[in-house]
Amino acid sequence: MNERIWIMGASEGIGAALARAWAQRGARLILSARSGDRLTELARQIDGAEVEVCDVADADSLGRAAKRIGARGVLDRAVTLAALYDPGKVMGIDPVRAARIVTVNLTGSFNFARAACPLLRPGGQLALTGSVAGYIGLPQGQIYSATKAGVTNLAQSMRAELSPQVDVRLISPGFVDTRLTKRNDFDMPALMQPEDAAAAIIRGLDRNGFEVHFPRRLTLPLKLLAALPYALSLRLTKRLVT
Image (cartoon, rainbow, N blue to C red):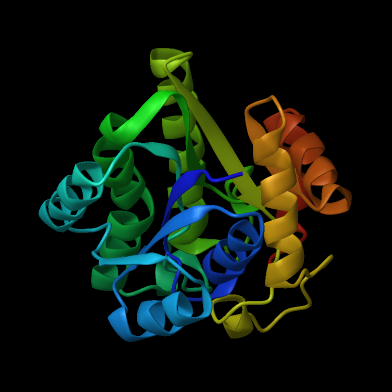
């Protein structure tokens, strides 16, 4: 394989699992997140992995990291999985926390795309991570779902503007067993392990197409719900309010 890949949000969860899976295929990895200690430990497990500590919410931090990465060569792929999550009802969230979630999830995706695209080889791949939570506004989705809907829209715009020079992709995971989802106090249908999510992402990114979404037994019903007229879909989602 020998691809050079930059992974943002690699310190834990899906990002760390994705790094391990790509490393097994021979990829040369650049691992990024805010947590330097976790990245260093992961890099010890992955021979030859580089560590670039930076923050998607800080465009200057990303710019400095991108400059160092670019000085060492071009990228084949760049993917960001960095996100914040805070379950609950919209009117119950602290406004400062809500603003931080928007900054990391949505503005952070924009920042990463701006930093990573100039480093990609012609036809290289940029993958932004949305969520099935962004398909339609659901109870308990709070500001997180709104940011993921924004990431989906951003990826669609970038795909139209940058293809074929950049292969823009959207990753839309369902529920994955991570530190973030452990905060949920409801049953999570079709819950996946990070390693299975990483395998699904790699399979999807290796194929043609725009969106990588999984597991389909969850994503397809939600896509159908989102496609219904509002008079019907909002009546159905209202039933989920507790």
